[in-house]
Amino acid sequence: MSRAKPVSPRVTMDDLAKEAGVSKMTVSRALSGNPLVKPSTRERVCKIAEVHGFRVNVAARNLRQRSTRTIGVVIEMTPSHDRSMSEPYPLSLLGGIMQELTSNAYNMVLTTLPLFVAAPPAVDGLILLGQGMNEDAVESVQRAGMPYVIWGSVDGNEDHVTVGSDNVTGGRIAAQHLLAQGRRACAFVGDATHLEIADRLRGFGEAMVDAGACVVGAVPSAFTQEGGYQAAQVLIAEGARIDGVFAASDAIAMGVIAALREMGRSVPHDVAVIGFDDAPGAALFTPPVTSIRQDWDRGGTLLAQKILALTKGAKPISETMPVQLKLRIS
Image 1 (cartoon, rainbow, N blue to C red):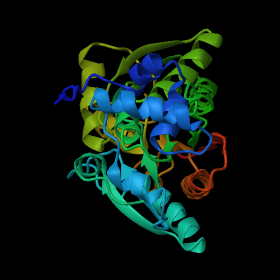
Image 2: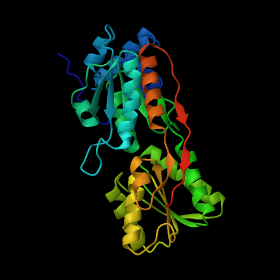
Image 3: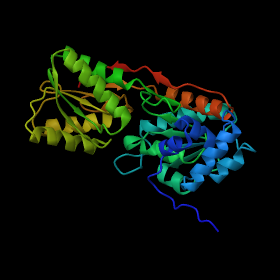
Image 4: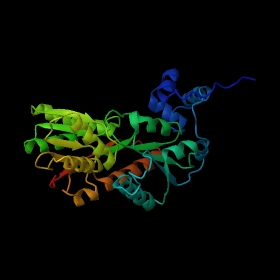
């Protein structure tokens, strides 16, 4: 009796695509049973996937025969004491998703990425909230072998249906606002291994350079107030002479402000700070945080609309939503 090749965590959908001589999108569609893929191609892809131990969800295969009228929502972030599920991300997105699914008589199953990988739920399709570091979360969802859409960076993701804010423009708006305040030596705080954050940094840096200014430092930070606090301490300890900071989220911005004030820097007199998200807490903080607003509700609605379209065999396209400056005191 022949023995199957042992599972290798290094095998990716790109690897399968190269071996099968097709695109990664075709592999994804073949593994999810999409009727747009020729039966012979689907059979070849599935056989290669099986040889390499690439996991195909049995529940998803069975559901090709019968719909559950249920959509799974997978949250990439891991809830913690510092970053809870009650924050605008992902709570506001979930509200938009739930409202749209309910209006179409669909149920929603909510799970986190580790739980999903361990025990994928029986659903018709998936919505992934967050691409993860270097898109590792996307890889995990692809392995489930069912239709999916992503909340995240739209740039460079032609193989996926993605909904997200215009993060590059958001970064440019942040830079233009700081420049208009006379700030010329600005820093960025945020984890650019996440594509959305990398886009914000790219737009910010481009706008600063175009204006003849500079980004004097870019410090990684967790998506928490404590992360922003620690990142600001690193900036000051390194001796960076800054008069402006663009933080990748409002929570990070609040931590930056707290650290600057503790070190005797006045905000905004000495250092102007701008965040991203327009979270409710931004307006209540002292000083109230200027921010780049994302339309979470609209994003959730679009995610639900697109996954429902995918499960019905349609071909929805990725969509980028506009952002806007919410001017406050910081």
